[in-house]
Each structure stands twice: as C-alpha cells, then as structure tokens.
Length: 343
Image 1 (cartoon, rainbow, N blue to C red):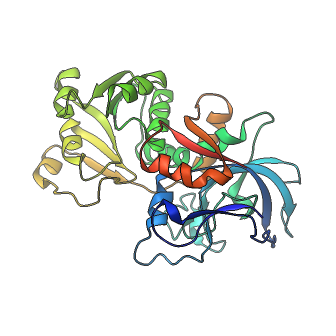
Image 2 (cartoon, rainbow, N blue to C red):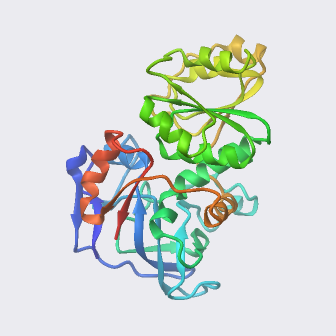
C-alpha cells in the first residue's frame, strides 16, 4: 500500500512516500475505505515535530481528513456497502466510552486520526463505522476531505459552544487558516456580520470573497482592536474567534464587547497569556474553549457543505507522493485555505 508517512520526528525531511505498507485488515464494526483524497491541517506540523508524551509507531501515516469509497465491511456493520462514497469524521472515540451517549463525545478521551492514530494519507484506511458519513453522488472527494476537521471544529465552537445568533457581530482573527476560512462562512450562514483581521491586503481580499463583511489589514492597522472599536461605534463585537493565542488575545479582549464571548480552539502563536483578570470580570467576558466536535456536529456541518452553503477553500491540490512539499507549503503559510493530497 502507498502512503505518506513520518519516519521520525523532525523537519520536512522526515516526511516520506512509501509503497510497501501492508493493506490494513478490517475488524468487527469497522469499514475499510479506499481513500481518494486526504487533507493537511496545522496539526500535521505539530505531530511531525512531536511533543513530550506523544509515542508514535513509525512509519506513521499522516493526515486527519479524508474521503473515499467503501472497500470492505467488518462483521456487524450496517448501513454501508462496498462502493459507497464516504467522508471521514477524524475524531476517534473508544467504543465503550460513556460519553458516546451524551452527544458530546469530544469532551472525553478522544484521539485524532494522524495524531495518535494512523492517518488518512494512504490508499486504504480502516475506521469504526461511526466515523463515516455517506456523500452525495458527484460531490468532490477533495472538497469533502478539505472541510472535515476544520468544519466540525468551527461548527462546534461557533454554533454549539458559542451559541452564535442572527444579527450578532463576529471578529475572526486571521483570514487564511482552515478553521478561520470556514468560520467566516459559518458565521455568515448564521446571519452574523463578520469582521476579519488579515495579515495583508491579499488575504483580506480573499476573506471578502468567502463572505467577510469588513476586513482590517493588520499591516496598516497593527492595533486592530482600535479599528474594531471605531468601526462599531465603540461597542466592539459580540464574539471574537481567536485561534492565534498569545500574540493576539490581549487585543481580542479589547475588541470584545461587555458581555461578549471569545472562542478558542487553538493557539498557533503560543499558549501562555498574561490575563488581565479585572478586564475579564468587569466586562463580563466569557472565554470559551473547545476541541474538535461530536459526530452530530460533523454531520450537521457536512450537510451544509453538501447543500452548497459552505464552500471548501482549497489553496493547493498535490499528488500523494508530494506530501513533503505539501507540508512545506503549509509550514510557510504559502497558500490560502487547505492543502489536499489526491490519491
């Protein structure tokens, strides 16, 4: 079996293209999928670098997102048949976990494909039945793969955890990342007015193309929280989406109105933050964190994508054997949107 793998932790040089991996066997309750497209996330770079406590079996197949065709069924699988077109929910939950009964199974001991589990950048992947969703005929495999992890993450944060309402104002800090490009569209779909802080004029223009109402170029307005206050008549915004972390949370606090919410699903600039507690309680600001999302949110989001209400933002499509180049593009922030590996 062909696959893109990590041979060890390190730089882009540890990403390898292999053609000698065994085809995985399907077990009870599992489905084998012949993958047609996989997609990269920032997570792939962190897994490649490694962290204390992350123990991988090398070679380790990369990528959390994928879509393809059902190839084989394990005992007890119902609702799927060989030949079905499917996309993949990247959150793995132990089958005996009580959280599966709550509808919030992401708030338990989850794992993510491509992180603790072998990923999707391979010709074949075996998954629990619950991780699959049928795709409509004609829907592009690459588009389905591109929106999986970022889609369920953004939907759960904005809609389920954040409770976004029609008529509210949303500020999204950063324009080009996968979660942010989807968050722009979800916020518009929910009936919100969307402000976006972009790193340059090009990314601001791209954000406008996918639905941003107002963009702020931080090259011209490095104190973008002041620009937000001016644009809103000093009211500031109801909701801030800040997945950058240490470098931006101070301004996000200032850009958030009294009684507003700040939504956080990551911290690409670092996790430490000098919190002004007085600012937090005197302005009644809620900090809301979340990771991934339950399968019901994955289905809700993907149905919006299937209906054409959410568009995959794909910056590049590369063949599987160019996975190393794909990671370099991602690491250098060289594309707007997602990078898809076609298999």
